[in-house]
Image (cartoon, rainbow, N blue to C red):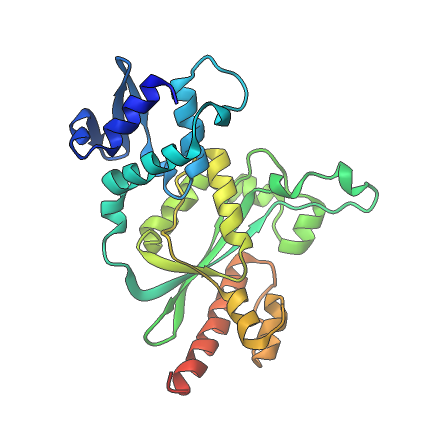
Amino acid sequence: MTESMQSWARLVLDAEGLSDWTVKPGEAYCWIDDRVITFDFERYIGNYSLFLHEVAHALYPNKEGPLLNHYHGGEWAAVYGKLVNRYMMPKERKMRKLDKLVIVDVEATCWKDDSLHPSQLPRRDESEIIEIGVCTLDLKTLEFSGCQSILVKPVTSEISEFCTELTGWTQEDVDRRGMSLADACGILRKQYDTKNRSWASYGQYDANIFNRDCERKKVGYPFGKFHVNIKAVVETILGETLGMDEALKRFNLTLEGRHHKGSDDAWNIAKLYATILQRVRNAGI
């Protein structure tokens, strides 16, 4: 650690050091070597690697290439944790709402071309969110509602013919009706209060691509800490790995709408999880 980094770490970790920070909605300022460094800290919640990247570039503005070797992650993890506590966590510490579970299903750009070798196709981690299907499951009545499809316009990739066949969405659809990822995440936070409610998806993919796409586009992660992987719940109950459509069949449920349309899948996932919860409650657990 450089001397300036050590002093900043001491500043943040020192209970009295908060007087050297200026905090207002959306931003946090810190003095480092007579410079004022500004951080939009809300974007770093759940995004530690972005925090490290931007802090490094603030401290080494003329350094090119990867900067992770220029500081010790363990010490900065403590700094990050303290900043989360001091700045954003008052919002997170509000009692988590247990009235509803937010069900999410993500569709993303994808490719398949039998004329090309797999090495010539875009990598899986280059996929971008194009649709966020979302609805809510009332945890008291087990009724689900508020289902909608939020279209997102990709920035660095396009919807392939294969993707259209899978999801039903075309490039024209997202060009005409799609919004930015930042605006889509704003809808999740404002309409569904996703920062204060638990959310669920069928599998870990949705959480992973949200993390990756938000980090890449420097958009604040729209969810709180609590994610329910319903696929893992199904695997625990049945002892085997099943896709969402197969899981519905195993619980004697019918897939409604179009598979791989986000809003329809979110509805079906809510129906599946409501059925599981109802059986658990009927068993007196």
